[in-house]
Image 1 (cartoon, rainbow, N blue to C red):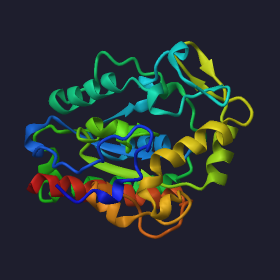
Image 2: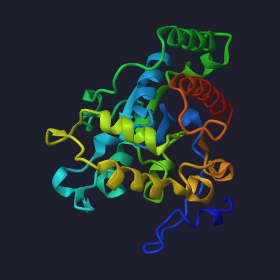
Image 3: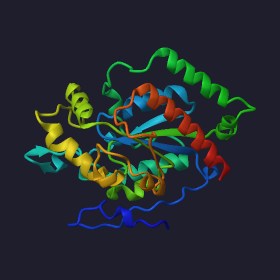
Image 4: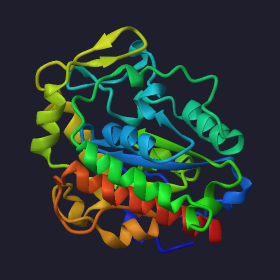
Length: 283
């Protein structure tokens, strides 16, 4: 196993857990679907990216971590507010069960009642021309003489797993069920602006709208606490720790820019997914 001493800050000193380690995924031929995770802070663009990728790649469906929220009455509280943004708010065993089903059956789990697709993400930030160009690029990659043809020849499906909290100590078992891990960055200012501009969220009980100050009290502190280990000096608005990313199989865009244009993110994600699917086929 790789040296994971650099992950000592990942877990709370009050409740230490085993550090994350990278484990090889099974060969792709043993699976009916490949799970590609899109993770990052709330309002970093994950759901928008997932919906765009679904329109670009064949045989693709989306699984949302938000569909595994516990009932509102079971949620913990923090600073006098319900905390929707912590591991304890997620039914992790059910999420792991869904991921295992997807990999072995290649279908959306029949026991998951998805509500997340009812939530709006606003106007598409990518031009129709750019989307068409990327669709053409993937179509060319899928031709019989091109590498992508072999990837999907057996009927393989692609699951895009959209989640705000996928790469942390509480999600170790789930991370081993993810084949490709993408991470999106965002600044506190942009995350706050986007989150506060949202109308709200469809939930099991009906509808949730953030109370005033929710991002500052809950969303951003929880994001920083869970993801600090991915950044140098645990500064989530600083530079990513590329060594930590490599050792844990997490892929992020090059450079230190936090707020990246969605067209650039989409281009990077399309290229990365194609590259990773080809690489896994050769394993």
